[in-house]
Length: 450
Image (tube, rainbow, N blue to C red; front, top):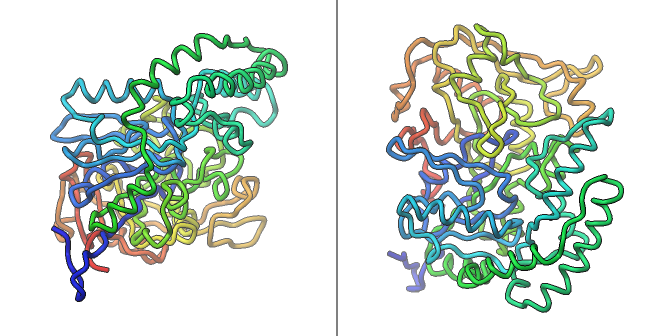
């Protein structure tokens, strides 16, 4: 029911932005699913199907890549904003996979007509570039090979094919010929790969276009109207702040802005519609792919903390299946994320993975070329040179798995979390103690209050 103000007019909804504060894989999908119980719309605003959100509901695991996690709640509208790059073939396969488990998707999924398309030549270019980089001193970046970067390049170069072009076959064909010629020149030349043919790409696009047309929408205006009518909107980020194209460990980053401020631009709404920023943070740190990682531990040696985090945390990428690199929580890196995103509150996830460790360490800063630094540097080479400085905390033997009340956490776990709050200067409003949506401790609700 809509609330009314003193003049009798409907009160606008309260909107929450969920972002990862590390290198992705923090558990955003579960938190978005949990929060969707209080939302009347969920929107993805950046990235593509290189994102992977794994949800566990009543013991059943579901992996999502492009479709917002809110799709797991019956009747909730879900939106794909203009800041997302869309592989139409993958999108339809994901829809069909969800329909097979009994979900109604097409009537409540709205796709911005302004989304750039990922097409087969983007994937070919992405993979060929990574293969070429492997032989260079810098090495591979560690992309997912899904065509995300090349698609964003076309967007910025103002030559992208967009979802709206699928409605106009002749226009689509004309733009496709020009764009394919450009990428084929790179594929057959510098990248030493194979050129792709026009007709199969065109035919496939026209085939999926008929299924996508009913879902195309003016997403920004739809969100604006829904919010003004009293709906609570949930903005779902992908990847993590430290993978942001501008603010992450460049060049070992993704191709979009993962920070909270991009929720407005990537969904087509004003920043005045962003009321609360929830930062999702693992109780330790992980990273997939290449790039600096100051607190990294060895995950291969049995009996070590790194091996414990990797195995107990089941740390493998949702999209790639690659083993995630693991390390201690880095509060200095989190401080950077808190500043960039304007974090209102934090949700700590996977606390239960730390159960049974004798000691727990937290990086509180670094020594960089002989001088102390209390926040993650901006230059990747500087980050590589950082020597982490740790505080050590006593662990706990009790199980935190599935705990839903703060007072039932072990005293050492509570002390650990309270110290993290001090180090990052942001309140912990939620704690996740397991993968199921019910394994959650709530201290302050993101949708409560003004």
